[in-house]
Image 1 (tube, helix red, strand yellow):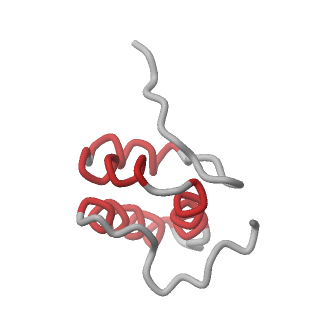
Image 2 (cartoon, one colour):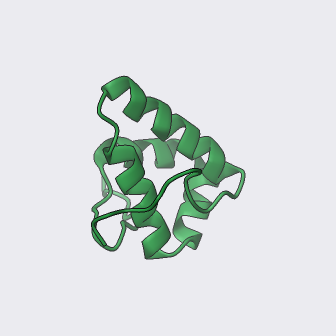
Length: 83
């Protein structure tokens, strides 16, 4: 079985838990592949900035819902400081 290639960000690589969630949500994955590498970087950094695993999981779930609805950036996020 081959692993599916999913695009990452400009600075951040796609974490495995977010990748699995995107694969499980085809509409979210479609938006994910349509947004820019900089936008993907923002989503990844936003997920990875969570201090608790529960918060990270909520962000992944909310992110997949938002991406499924066509949202291209995380809400209320000042941006990735790593770029």
